[in-house]
Amino acid sequence: MINRNLKEKGIESLLFFSAVIAVVALFLLCIFLFSDGIILFKHISVTSFITDTKWFPTAEPVHFGLLPLLLGSIIVTTGAVIFSVPLGIAAAIYISELADPKIANIVKPVTEILAGIPSVVYGFFGLVVLVPFLQKSLGLPTGQTALTGSIMLGIMALPTIISISEDAINSVPRSLKEGSLALGSTKWQTIYKVTVPAALSGISAAVMLGIGRAIGETMTVMMVTGNSAVIPGFPSGLFAPVRTMTATIALEMGEVPQGSDHFHALFAIGSVLFITTFIINIIANYIKRRYRFSL
Amino acid sequence: MSKSIMKSIVLCSIVFLVLMSAFAGIGCVDQETEEGADAPEPQSIIIKGSDTVLPLSQAVSEDFMYANPEKSVTVIGGGSGVGIAALIDGEIEIAMASRKMKDSEFENAEANGITPVEHIIAWDGVAVVVNPENPVKEITFEDLKGIYDGSISNWADVGGEDLPITVITRDSSSGTYGYFQKNVLLGEEYRQDALVQPATGAIVQEISQNAGAIGYIGYAYLDDSTTALSLDADGEGYVEATPENITAGSYPLARPLHYYTNGEPSGLAKEFLEYINSETGQEIVSEVGYFPAM
Figure (cartoon, each protein chain N blue to C red):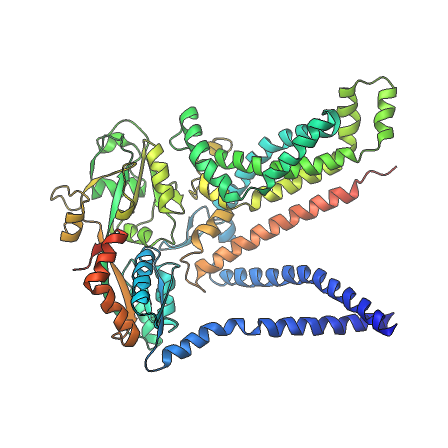
């Protein structure tokens, strides 16, 4: 009896330990990231890091300006949202409300396969197919633009948006839809006046998570956006090369001397990136919980 | 209840301790090799640094270890700066670099009691390449600098068609980036709107499909998809990027590839340097796409 009890406790604490690992990992990562990032501000003021419009990490004098990189990330992500949100929500509505179950059973797993493709493959596809296509069809000096990154990221964010929106739409109580239909609404009226508004919290959470996915993506973006650290205009900046925060870290970490200002600047960018995605995830969770549908 | 929580905490810490001790040994690997290196006749050395020199060192070390199975040569990339930093810290026997050591690095080395000695093991040519459809086939250093610092933005200004120039560089981790900046831009900063590519292959890819693009690549990467421009460094005529001109030293963007050792090399490091400078070693240099040091 005691033996059995001990075994139970043992298993329980093992599982508890596994759960704790994730929390500990997050905690250690935070400490590591912030403590290395903050050293930059011994030599460079916080205001110049945030407001400097130039990123010249190896020049004399050095410029560690976050602005072009932050705006680069924002413009690429915005483009991805414009592209993927309408498409993702439309696909989710079709799969959960309109499609023949046979078709839905094919379409849904296929969109989920999209999530399993490695990002370097997306990047390669973008570089070899989309970049020359955009350059020729739009007559641009180069096809490596923010728009190219946006389209690729949009495709990559689709599975997240579709599958979470679809769950949200599916969880709308049947009685609501039936009530609407019974009052004489058509199928389409029911969808856009009852079902979608009722699922809106879940859909918003899906969009936020999609943004989180897009802003943190590195490999694909680095391969197709050209990586020029210039402040992009809007919307003209969509058709010019930009550099995102993630690409900067990936590009420059190779030869950066450990312990130099440049090294700490990359950690500072990493911290900004971490905080951004952290906030986005919190907002997504909050929306999901706050507006959960209850009857 | 609180007793069971106590119990699980105790159990957890035991599991944690066990795991910690399991991982404890991981960091010690470097030290062991260092200890081995301190022995009078080291049978293993570490070579670290430039990604440009990496394929060459790898090829030579494989051949060397095949001939001497009891000796081990470990080759690690990371970039010229990384290798030199490791040499200064005394972690490695040989640093590879596609550029010369900077004065600041020499000062750091001196402060650490290290005296770096330079060895030229091969030559590399940096080719300035454009799309094969581009009518421009030669360029002066002055125009090239203008294109890269942002003062020239149209091919018409350098004798080509009326087409915007798409300027491509490598990322700052690349030794070639620093070499080009020093020799063509004379230390000035690259234009801000230049495309930055993470690898030489990506530069070739973009130039082969973009009629207005210009970039620089190692000679080993030259093929039919791009055309190398003839260069004129000082107004004394254009020099084509050919193996003959690079080895003769008349091509302006030919650079030596370096090994740095702490003091005159001894033991296995000396043996390896002799091997790379031997006839067999220099044959491998040509096979990899670089040019013999002699």
